[in-house]
Length: 280
Image 1 (tube, one colour):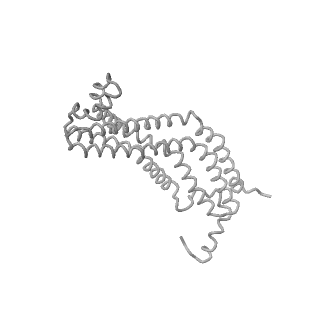
Image 2: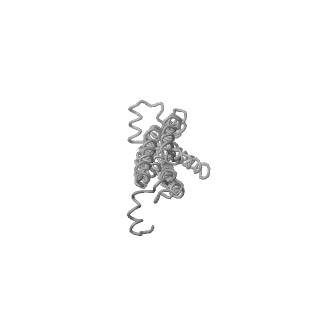
Image 3: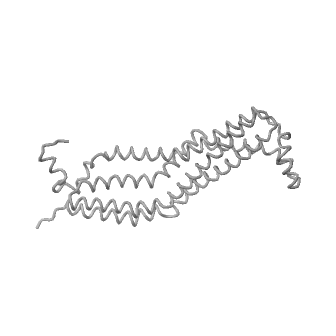
């Protein structure tokens, strides 16, 4: 009895691929040495978002205490901008979670499922299994590479546009507002500090509206950069990965080079179309 090499390959290849994914790739992408670099980068972003929130909140309080009411709307705008940084912190925490579980989930769960679907499609000659497997594979690859790609894009943007410098300038603008008041109150008692905070902070600073507007612009730029680098770049990364996969694999159909698994007798799904004379 002659053994069909393609039929055997269609059984062996998914099994070998699943073992390699679980043992080799799963061990590498789930290791602390791989995840530590990305976790450190995300921790730096989280600290930067926290510092910017504190600076914006402090600057808002100081500007609002100026006797001239012309700076009150600006103080309110800065407070509203600071509240948007909560979203940035939530996204960073989600990215940390994604980095911590992506290696195990993708290479030790999803990729073996993909291999099992390919094997089932080969054994039962069902095109549907292969189509589901390809879409699940693309989802798995996006899951594991979206954060590294977004951090790479952030690094490129920082080198070209100086995004980190914009955030630093925003934090420095908020710190400068509080420096004079902090210097004046550092030797006072807690009661004296509270009294100064409630009644004399505006007289000591004498901030003019133009300075407050400059500070508002700095905080707007800083928060915009944080939202861009933390919230927008992951979405762009997913789109880039999906479009790249679509160009390479043509997701609307099974790729033409796959049929090492399916060339034996074709798909039963295609037989009604072939009998009825329908052409794709």
